[in-house]
Length: 106
Image (cartoon, rainbow, N blue to C red):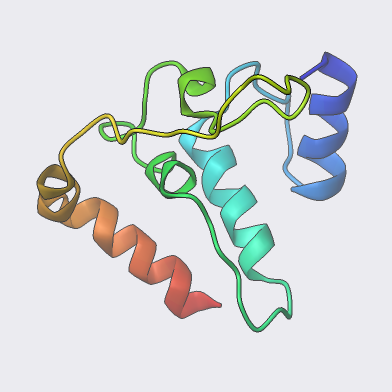
C-alpha cells in the first residue's frame, strides 16, 4: 500500500490517531475488523487470516503470505493453507476470547 493510501485509510476510515504504522499491527487489524463489524449488514464473512491478524502469536510474520489471490494476475490460483494446526488456534484462549468480545460488541 502506498504511504498516502495507508495514511488516508488509517485516519479517514479507521479513525485512528498518531502516525500510521508501516506494518499492519494487531491494533490496526482489530480496528479494521471492528469497523467492518459495525456495518449494518445481516451477514459479514471474514477470512480466517483476518481474525488471526489480531493475535501476534498466531498471525504470519509476513502478511503477504496470507493473500489468497492476486486479482491482477489471471494465472494466480485461489489457494490458502492455514500455517498452523487448528488445534493451536483452539488452544489459544486469549485469541478466542478476543474474537468473542468483538462479536459480542457488535
